[in-house]
Amino acid sequence: MASVLPCKDCISGTIHKGQPLGTDTKLFGRSVYISPVPERPKGTIVYITDIFGWTLPNARLLADAYAKEGGFKVIVPDFFPFQPIPLSSIDAFAPVNETAVPSFLTGLSQKLSAYPPIIWFLYRARASVTTKLIAKFLEDLKSSEPDLSIFTVGFCWGGRYSLIMGTDKVKKGTVNAVAAMHPSLMSIPSDIEGTIVPVSVGAGTNDTLTPASFMKKLEELYLKQAVELEIKSYEDMIHGFAVRGDIEKEDVAKAMQDAQKQVLDWFTKHL
Image 1 (cartoon, rainbow, N blue to C red):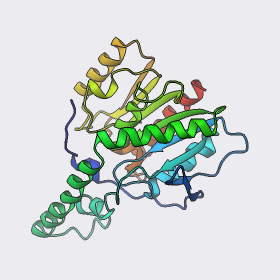
Image 2: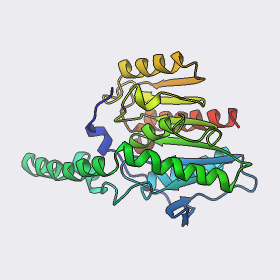
Image 3: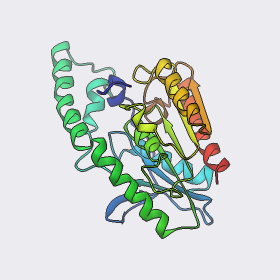
């Protein structure tokens, strides 16, 4: 079982520059962001976010890239029962202005103030609530567009639920395949028991929340179920790299691009 509490890298990272090109709307009673839809989409990707939620610029920009480069319709729903973790939490652990590093006491105060919302979030967005909520959304989506393949991809907190959506907790035939980058806060084996679709997972070799030992265990459990599986390791990458990595760093930018390709190639393979 992975850690039941978030690590520093769960709530840190960089905010990416750029203007998302999609639109905010409502779908099945939930707020969603929909990237510009290709003229003939191959299928639909439901993007399950990290704890910063559906409005995080990084998430929307990545969704736009999936749509443009992969030819998919991409939906980023708000699956949270209340406000997501504020972006100020990122600044508490990784200041945006690195030349203005706070004093030890100020920094400690910022970090301590960031934790209560995280603990409250984890309670309100617990598995018994979230699994049913996401499963219903996917089943409603499949009913509305039965001819399109549906896929889920998740990051960190959302990575866990993307993998759960590949199990028999979701109506059979709803989802074609799932992917997760650095899934966090997982409970294994229960989260992945009854997996019925192909699974792709990626994580960094310096990921303290999902270390190599955890990934090996995950692989063993999937293979026991005879699941079609792809697991990729990203050298020197930390937790959260695939969505909140520093794109100004060449090695991180390349790993992020490779992770994006991993997801798109997997879903294209399983159309």
